[in-house]
Length: 156
Image (cartoon, rainbow, N blue to C red; front, side, top):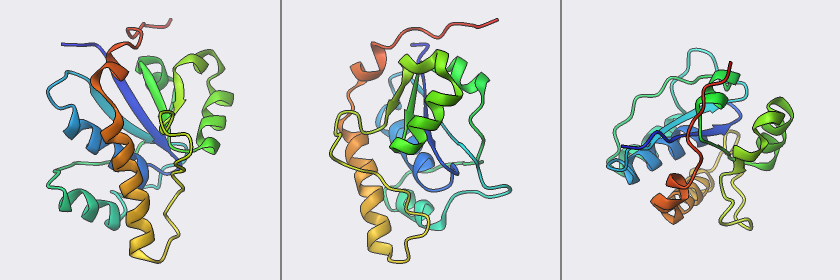
C-alpha cells in the first residue's frame, strides 16, 4: 500500500475536478493511491453539476461528492496537485509557492489538449466533449506517474 495522495483542483469543485477524481479512483482502485478533489472557490451546499453526475453514471461509476475548498492542509498532505487549467495552476503556484514542485497541470502529458471550464456551456455535446478530454487524460496516466512521487511529509 502506498502513501500517495493526489488532489485534482478546478475552480468550483463542481464540474471538472470531481469527474477527474472519480475517473482516477475507478482506474487505479487497486493501486493504493488516494485521489481527492477541491476547488479554488467551491459552490456552497452543492453536489456536482448534473451533467457531470450523468457522465459518471453513464460509465457505471458510483460517487459521493461534497465540494471543498483547496487549503494548505490539503496541499501539504498531497504528493501531487493536478490543476485543471493554466488559471488554476497560476493561482495554486501563487498561493502555495513552497509547494511549486508538486503542482502540475492535469494535462501535463498532453499540453495541446485544453480542458476549459464547461460550467457555462449550454450545449450538452460541448460539455460532454470536455468530460471526454478529462477521461482521455485519466486513461493516459499509468500507475508509475503516481508511484514515483515523493512521499508525503508532515509540515510543522
